[in-house]
Image (cartoon, rainbow over all chains, first blue to last red; front, side, top):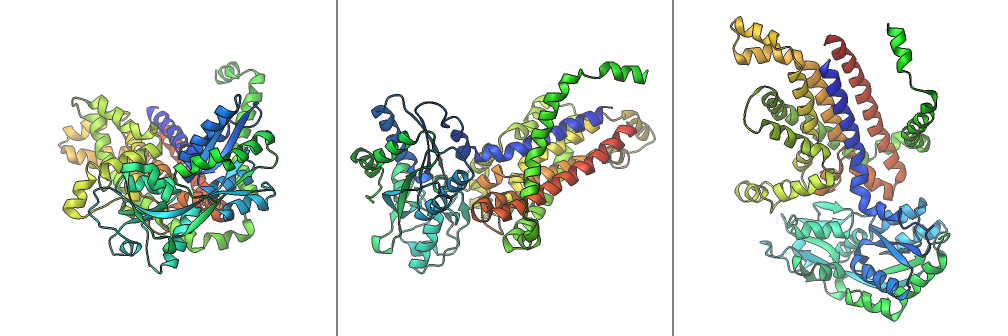
Length: 263
Length: 269
């Protein structure tokens, strides 16, 4: 009689493990959305591109300090994922994206009636410190045996990397297409790849953990970051105030110190 | 006696209300998937390059993970069930760690151990030029790490529940330990070994967190079905749903297959 019991337990574990695989791995992108949803007074949920993590965390603190009683919750993730989630009814009050294209999908659903560009960012090569592979230009990434990580195509940093390679006529075969720019950075920091295509701001945020290789401006790709208050937000006034704060001198200063360029 | 026993153990009727809510909660998402499925474009979606690559890769890696799990997990289950050695209870607890560990954490742990600069990985790289991350073998490693405990636990349970008199009889008739294992023990635990193998395969097939963390995501090389589903959701949601149906079908097949197995082992023991 013991065998069937053990099998049932094993199967139960199997099912619980299978079901936990999805949520646990996607939770960084989805979980903060729930607690901050609009019912509570003064709670604001901001969906923002991964590359904005450092700058927006600082802006959120400053906004809370300037508006007592307001609490800002961030959901950082790949812009394309965030756009999909907002389209599917995720309770976002504000969306800050890393590309016009991802904002277009939200606007096409009628959820972002007005938008403003608030920053620009360009790409940079990140390499692990003390790497045995010498990388000084994009051309070095095309050499055989050099492991390169990029973002997946749907994410702005992935689309940007593709444009970058085409613009400079280099044939680069990445070893992995990561979910978002911070995942690319993590693979570089761990030394699992020889180089990753990330944003200038990510290299700055990583400090000594990566070594940046600057791409000259005329060879580089720049993308504009749009922000919009989401239509139907239960906290529309606060959402508008947050957008205005990002565009204000205080918000722009925080973005500049994170390495973003003016829009 | 049966009848009276059954009526006495029937729960009071109000229990049915939360029970129905629980059942609906579990069934509705699957129903949603089935209703929203792009049935008309299904063949086209499933035969696209991305889908076929992901299907092939998932089958190859999940089967490899199952074979490896049997090859090294069965001996471990045998030792855990039968050999007396210090730290056996501790070893058994260690085996279950990957079961309860969030798969992403497993992926990070694998990177720190077998990554290019990992504890073991750096020597693999310097001595033999083997790097596991971002390779198909890396996917197999991630899947084996997460799935092998299912095989070990299932088989170990079967071994411990076995009537040892049969093995003793074979031994007294002059069979060597190896012969007893091969001719008596193995056939007796056969059904459990198959059940454990099927569970291992199903878990490996569904593996997401450890795979994307340790092996990355590249179509045709490391992008298995669950990864293709996740990535597809942003590009072509219909494709993601079509691939989800494949995984759902496999899950149902596993459940149906195992139900027969349970019935048979239940009768046998």
